Amino acid sequence: MSNLSATAFYPHIAWNVEAAFAQTQARPDKEFAERLCRSYRHQIESFGGFGGSGWKNIAGKNQHVHDALLASDIEMVAQVIADPTTTELFYGLESNLPGTLEGYLVNPTGVMIEVVSIGDRLIRLAEALGVSPLWYPESFGHRKEPVDFEALLAVIDSALGISVQFPNPYPREFGIQTSRGIMGFRAVQALYQAWRLKSLSVEYGEQIVEIGAGAGRTAFYAQQLGLSNYTTVDLPLGTMAQAAFLIGAVGPDHIVLPGEARKEKAIRIATPADLLEGQLKFDIAINVDSMTEMDRDHAVAYASVIANKAKAFISINHDVNGFRVGELEPLASAHRLRYPYWMRNGYAEEIYIFPRRRSWKRVFG
Image (cartoon, rainbow, N blue to C red):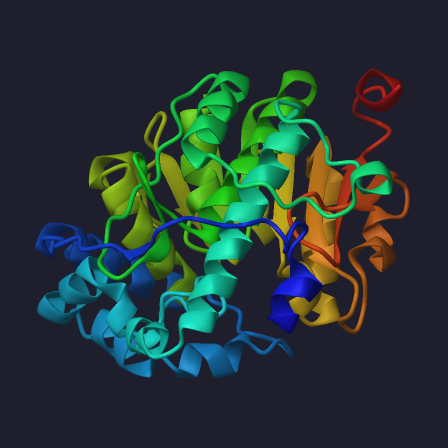
């Protein structure tokens, strides 16, 4: 349990929760698969390459998916969207990879570490929202009492003003069984990030762009919180991963793929070229766990667009790669608030406010 002790905030709690894998039987959607193929070809035409990042090697794990998209193999693409866990599509984004289920069946310790990590972060979410008091170890030592997750979700509902749900659109998604669906690690992280965006949108506006959006969970929860003008920006296969989650979470009619016409209140998936060439308008930008994984030139290019167009920028990244977000030159003139990220040990949450836009004191004063 050494990994748990190093990463969990409350590793000593007497956990009593049910781990589960989703049993979803998604229907292959050939019409959406056709849209994906058309969009993918459009993206490849404008794709500028991976630069010096490691995503080229990760993309190579899905060469067969790339080939199917370019060849318009509708049957295969539809099957991948219906069950992306048979591929490496979520590599680096989610924990649902080929062999995950089989691995957990023979590794109960691994299951417990994952389950505790999820429950641990739900407590932290409630603490961040202020609906659960922070544990005070100086007086009370380690927190050990069991946690009622359904009660915790109810008070989180009250803080967010929604009924939190955990959509599980494809099979074998792993997490904690709740009355709202199987709750995974990334879902709890996304709830926090959507809440942070909602909080800042009151001052800075509701047009959001997310650079490197994973499976699109933050976009989903942001929409639930009323942020209906949301754009994700990602590499070509990253947009496929978002499509695989969002088609089941919001439906194909509420997704706009790269190269498609804008649609009101739909989550828009865009290309790096769309952002870097100035085609996107946004008030707030967010990047989670990816900007320092790019090569520095690409990161500087993104930071430059953000500094020129955004009113605020949220960065949630660790500091152990070749550079830190705060070292990127285009962000030097911004006011920065930096503090430990509530939801993961070793990560910094930084909020950049660009002085020409709005008053720093109105947000942090």
